[in-house]
Each structure stands twice: as C-alpha cells, then as structure tokens.
Image (tube, one colour):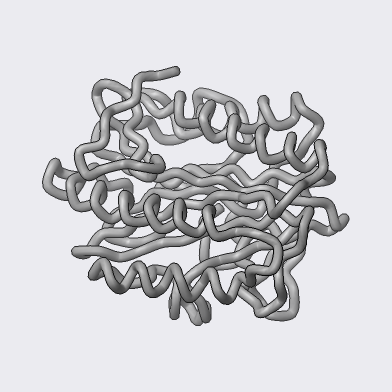
Length: 272
C-alpha cells in the first residue's frame, strides 16, 4: 500500500532527513586517504545518537553497522572495515536514521584523494541521473518516469544501471511501497500523488550491470570488477514540485524545488 503523508508527518520526515544530510556532509568532509570506514561509521553513530535519533540500518535484519560503506566495485551494503582508504578510491556512504518515529535515508559517493577522469565522470553522471530523476517527481506522473530518466542519462554516457536493487517509498518504515527501479519505460506503474515520499537512488556501474553478493551476505559488488557509484535523496511529492528532504544544508522548513516494476531486491537493506 502506498501512503500519502499528512503535513504533520511530512514535518517529522523533514527533521529526520535533515539530520541524515548533516551527518553525511560531515562524513564527506572526513573522507581522505588513511581514514577508515570503521572510523566514519563511529562518527556517524555518535552524531546520530547525540541528535536523539537511532541508526536505521544497525541491527536491521542483522546488519552490523550504522553506515553502508561500499568501496570501489562494491555497489551497496558494504560493511565498514579497519582498512585505510587509499588515494584513487571511491566510497559510497549510505545512511539512515529513525527520529520521532520517521525515517531518513540518503547516500553519496565520495572520491578519496585524486581519482581517475573516468571515475570522476561516473560520479558526475550518477549525480546528474539523480537530479534528472527528481525532476520527474510531480503529481500525476508515473513511478516509471523516474527510472526512465536515470536509465536514459546513464546509458547515454556508456555506463550501466544496476537492476537487482531499486529505490523505495519511505516514512514510518524504512522500506515502503512503491518500489522505484532505475530503468524502464515511462508512463507506467503507480501515479504519483502529493504526500508520497520516495527514496530515489541510482546505482550505476562503469562496466556491465550484473552484481553478486559476497560471502558476508551483505556486500553487493559488480561481477566484472568495475567501479560503481550510488547517490540517493529522499524526496516528497508536493503540488508545486519535488521537495528534496536530504539536500545538504537542508533545514526542517526546506524550500520546495521546482522542476529544473522492478526486479525484486536480492539483499535486504535497500530496495534498490
């Protein structure tokens, strides 16, 4: 069932997602050669708890950490480790919180030191695909319009869209309906209505789209060993356009933006 949130519920979602954006902004600042994803995980958990919230991922279906930290060929659900980050790496940081009964969720992929031109292009194109997807978040649009915008942009630049994981609704639960694939034809699936809140999250590979799950039962990596990038925003559908709740620097009274079905998930943290 797809839920449309009340104004009071949307206010609570704004606060939860503003916290996610603030913590991710701090983690982005800390990423550098020599830093470990375990250290980033500890910072994230401390800041979340100091804000009176709870890490949404830690303990979720057995996941052991606050962050999903996915390095280089890891697509999603990478478990933080004590291995230092190295110059030239890229690392995806995916994080959620629960605050006052509502969830926030966002992800960024961050360069470590100096990265290759093609890796930089991968990050840029994935960010652009997310922006183009958000432009499709309008009343009476279709869920499939979102994924179509991602796929068209990504493939035009010679990259590929991951099929096994999808975006999702979010609110009083971390994963709600509808599922939001990052591919497909426009004009299909559920229609968007004011009050819906969506976690939109392109996952883009430099090589082919296929992924596999490692023996830790969580980390999804590209089958061909190519780099992968992941960006995610939580977005509310409003009568005047999409409202990005996890925009860096967002406040609870975030400004509304104007405009500028899927394979089931094979792992459990992110419906996409």
